[in-house]
Image 1: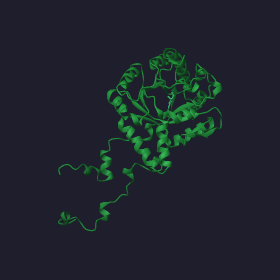
Image 2: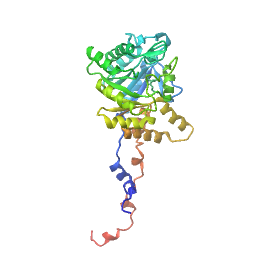
Image 3: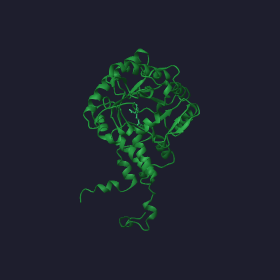
Image 4: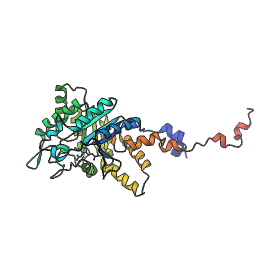
Length: 353
Ligand code: PBG
C-alpha cells in the first residue's frame, strides 16, 4: 500500500501538525439576558446554566468571563409587559434599563466587544420583529423604528449592532442613520441568513418574546433554501455590513461554507438556544459527554467557515480551556519512545556513541 492516511494520524504530534482548524475563546461570543431588577439571577428553565441577570449580576458575570479570556458578549433584554407597545418605543427610550446596563458594562470594562440585537420583538406587544398591521409585517415602516433603536444602542456604547429582524433594506437604512448621528465606528453584524427555525424555542421562553399571532415565515428564510442566502449576503454587504451571520448554525453548515467561500466579509454563526439545549438534555440523560460534544460542535462550526461563533457554551468552553481540558490531541498520555526502549535499535548498534 503506497498511501496509508492513518500514518498522519499516528500520534498527537503529527495530528497537531496537520490540524486544519483551530478554535479558541477569542472566536466566541457569550449571550447574556438582562432584566431590570438589580439583583436578579433567575435560571432560564429551557436552557440550563443560562440566567436572566440584573445589573449587579451582569457586571459580575462580565468580570468573571473576562478572567476566563472571554471578551465578546451579545446582550438581550427581557422586557416587562408594561413597557411593550405596538411600535416598540421602549427600544429607544431614555430610561431603557438594557441600554443603561450596557453603558455601565462598557464604562467599567472598555476592553469588551458588546453586541446588541436590533429587532422589535422583545419590545413589541405583537412579538414580531417588524411592525404588524392587519396581520401583516410591514417592511418599510419598520426601518425608521430599527434605525432609532440602532442609534440609541450606539449611543449606549455598543461596538456592533446585529439587525436580526430580516426586513429588506435594514442594513443600509441603519448604516445611514448611524453615520448621520456620528456613529461611523459602530459596526453592523447582520443576521444575513436567518431561518424560520424551531430551534429558537428556549430563547423565546427566556425573553417571553414569542409572536402573539402567526409565525415569522414572511421575513425569516425558508430552511429549504441555500442559494437565497447569497442574495441576502450580497445585499447586506452592499449596504455596509461588517459581518454576515448564519443562524441557526448546525443544520446550516452548508450555508456557512457557501457564504465563507463566496464573500470576503467575516462570517459569524449563531449556535442558537435550541441547538445548545439539545446537547445539554442528552448529556443530562447520560447519553453523551457534554465536554467532548461541546468541543467537537464548536470546532465543526469553525471548520464549516465561521470566523465568529455566538454560543451559550462560550463560558463552558473557556472553562475547559482554563482547566487544561484541551482537545483530545493534547490530552493523550505522553509515551516517550526513548524511556520505554530497552535496547538500541539494530541499525544504531553498529555505531560507537
Ligand atoms: C430576535 C432574535 C431571536 C433570536 C435572536 N434574536 C428569536 C427569533 O427570531 O424569534 C434567537 C436566538 C436563540 O435561539 O438563541 N429577533
